[in-house]
Image 1 (cartoon, rainbow, N blue to C red):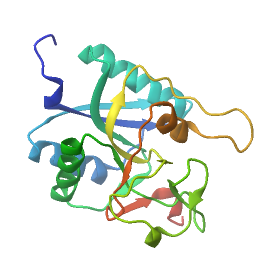
Image 2 (cartoon, helix red, strand yellow; image 1 turned 60 degrees about the vertical axis):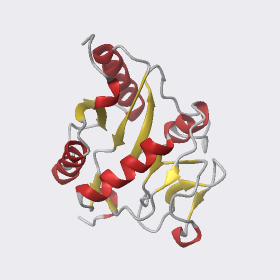
Image 3 (cartoon, one colour; image 1 turned 180 degrees about the horizontal axis):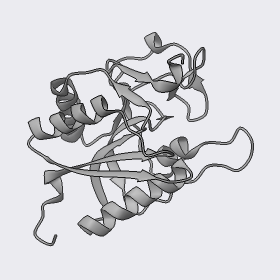
Image 4 (cartoon, rainbow, N blue to C red; image 1 turned 90 degrees about the vertical axis):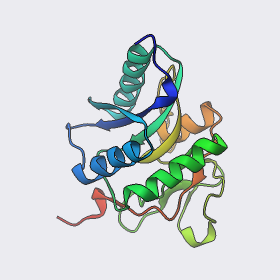
Length: 193
């Protein structure tokens, strides 16, 4: 793939423990990429853990495209996107024009915090205190769009209560994402069985 323009492509990384993904979410993201007149580069990796799945996906994209960075999505396999593709395209265009990344908030577990942090360590409970497109220090990688540094190796802090691979990703790569708080998501962990 020597004559490609990397800006023509948008990666979609879906790390998973069990090879699952939510079809509606993938369909919406693919439609958004096509509406944006970009080409999708889908990498779905199943491994024994998210750290290895994410790192493997980055390595695969680097091998295929022979670049160190590209733009795209990281979406956990248990996230249900409840937006129209046109809404996602508008966020993608805004982020690309401003050369920033964004995350959409979701609850980690029922009656728990949102996967968003203003200080890089504490999760927030109340989204109403955040402004749309506000800079945040870190958050979950359940729904992320922006720069993908393909040489990055995901890691979590070993001590109990340490930072997970998501927070370390932002801090290590000096990425200050914007919050797209109006994107509606459901985390499958919140749906009672």
